[in-house]
Image (cartoon, rainbow, N blue to C red; front, side, top):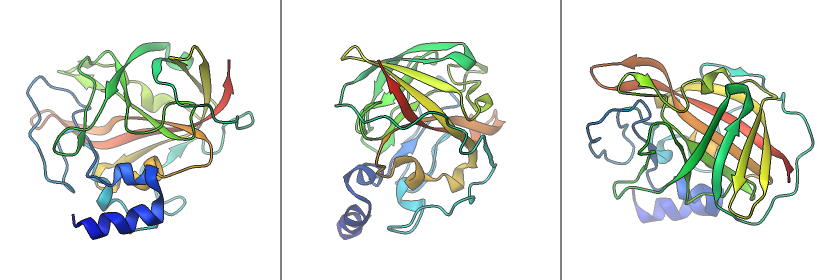
Length: 235
């Protein structure tokens, strides 16, 4: 990717979206012990989402209703949007509807531009270059759906519905509540990168894992599941 193209997109989308325009991939959410090979920007890794640069033309977001696989509970979030908090790293996520509680690993970018995935399949991970849960912008938490054929932390993520709540405990001692707006599944070639990572005017949360059909020979899921939520409380 040429530097001039990156600069152009940064001006259009803002500094947060520019984080996603460095060739970010979500790799390995299907899980396997073998190390994943590096991939050039714009290509998929096994279990991965497409590079951000390929998701949409500069300055454009996916059209409303354009996501494949549909969505669950669109617009069903309840409660008013709360004022965003200062940055503070997350420590734990709880999802009552899934009976799920997990401490959080810190995920960064690999040298090839891929997003790290949790080393422990039983734990979810927060993407550190992005916002913290509760601060303004779309915080991203990712997790494996399976690992070597066994269930992993986000195996049931696709069953969430609009109106479900998510709680994230932060380093500053605050517990932030998010309410799910919608849940959607996308073919990997149509992953809505800009919709997931673009700047927003409130504190949002995106939970990401793999979905769709699993190819056991390639250790590869053909889709991604994304939960879109917004902060509705803090204590």
